[in-house]
Amino acid sequence: MMRIVYCIPQIFKPGGIERIVSIKANYLAEVYGYDVTLVVADQRGNAPYYPVSSKIKMVDLKLPYDDLLLMSLHKRLVERRRLQKEHKKKLTALLNELHPNITVSTFTHEAAFLPDIQDGSEKVLEFHFCKGHKRLMADAFKFRFITKLAYYFKCWQEEHIIIPKYDQFVVLTEEDKADWIQQISTVKCISNILPFETEEQARLDTKTVIAVGRLDAQKGFDRLIKIWKEIYLKHPDWKLNIFGQGGDKQKLLRLISILELDKTVTIHEPNRNIKEEYLKSSIFVMTSTYEGLPMTLLEATGLGLPSVCYDFKCGPKDVINNGENGFLVKENDSKKFVESVNRLIEDKSLREQMGNAAKSMSKRYSTETIMQKWNELFNGIIEKQ
Image 1 (cartoon, rainbow, N blue to C red):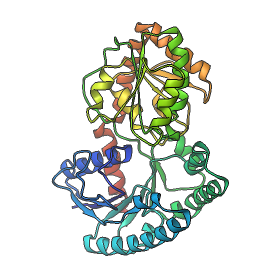
Image 2 (image 1 turned 60 degrees about the vertical axis):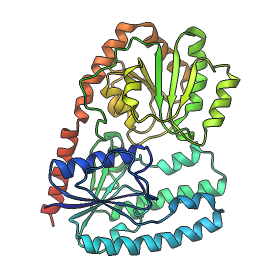
Image 3 (image 1 turned 60 degrees about the horizontal axis):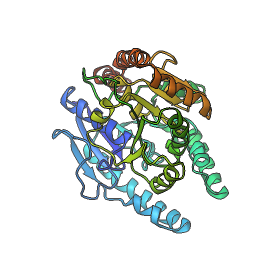
Image 4 (image 1 turned 90 degrees about the vertical axis):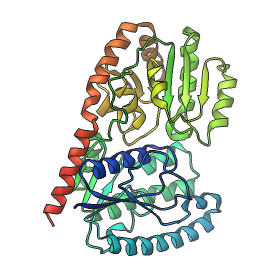
């Protein structure tokens, strides 16, 4: 029996990595019969946010990384070093106990030291971001100079020291693979899985646009709200629903108030039944500054919503064929973004045409298709041992 371990910070919060790891782990355990263990850094006694099969073992290492965010920079650096040392010690002991064939890092806390653990397992790095994401993060969040410098250095360290140590490096998009291929010979592209596999499809007959994601600088909801001001002036009967939580909520609410959009833009808490919200919408929009392969874009596509997205790095290029199942808009071209949304608002037949194309194209992200690629990858790695 194939034994596999997934390392992840926690699985009690809503998030793309948490969702995709849960889906994959469940499939490997239930369909392929793998012996799967989820190793979380700090679950804090919470139940998983997404369903986890009873066939999966879960081990909580109880390492409070989230507490670092409350500390001063100096104390944070010291405490993080201590946590990393403890993390490596605990994970080494666990892997030597479990004897997995493969250990997978989701490129979080354990990424830097996992390849150095000599437990006999092959080490796979699952990259849920895009090349240079820490540089993009530093720019998007407008970090101070010293912090930005640290992020730039960390990015260089990851690209040139950490990632090359892994037996297999897996990215989410062909766009990102092309950026890595000259540097990392072991790079392979396996996309995220379509979250909702259903015959259901949005009717596209409501005057509603939907956006979903964390309320922070990466997701660019401030850009979207400013864009919506222009759309609202022409289509005051349409609504924008944003679903998410995060540190920028109050700032975004103030922006909505300043732009006098209180009656047309609403920020909702994350919804466990987000599928129903997509089905009640007519257009999906996304103004992120960077991504890996956004699950929300796959969710919307799988339910037959036409999308309007900035052509940020990475994801939209792989999912959207411009003019077929949505519109790709050049980064920061807000005028074109407004025009694209307005065009879909004003032409229901175009919405339906693009929605049908989106639904059809989403099949390439089915669980069966993507998990077959993972199964082939894992078996291929073991055969080479």
